[in-house]
Length: 147
Image (cartoon, rainbow, N blue to C red; front, side, top):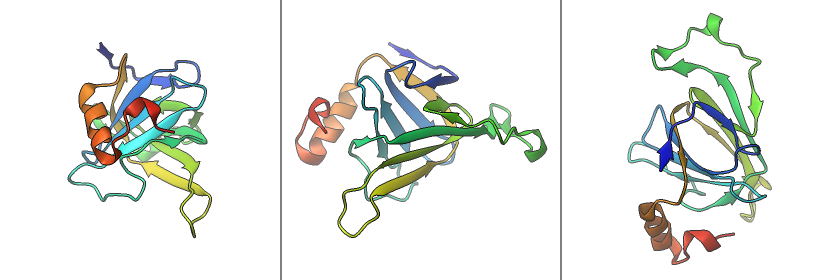
């Protein structure tokens, strides 16, 4: 079962969420079904791959920035509420900032990711089999046992 909410706070509504990007075919997943939310990014064919793609990462912070896009297109700058920033929220039309630990030697301890605006937000009741298979192919570990 899949539903398409406009926005949700992952702390108040823990579930598995798929965030589809407006400007690329990249897809972000947020798994808030446990006390420690986590995310992963799957780079689309038209996206630049990032070094932490295709694996789960603990979320230290998540925020939805101002809504800058809706079904009619980009919202004019003078109509945007730049103070409408929501912590621990995923929202259609917003860019999202995600912070996670970075254990890569020689790197800063925090990995920062700024996603393009969300064009579609999907709440899943279970992990899609194709996602389980895809991530298992990367390192042989099933999705449910990743740290």
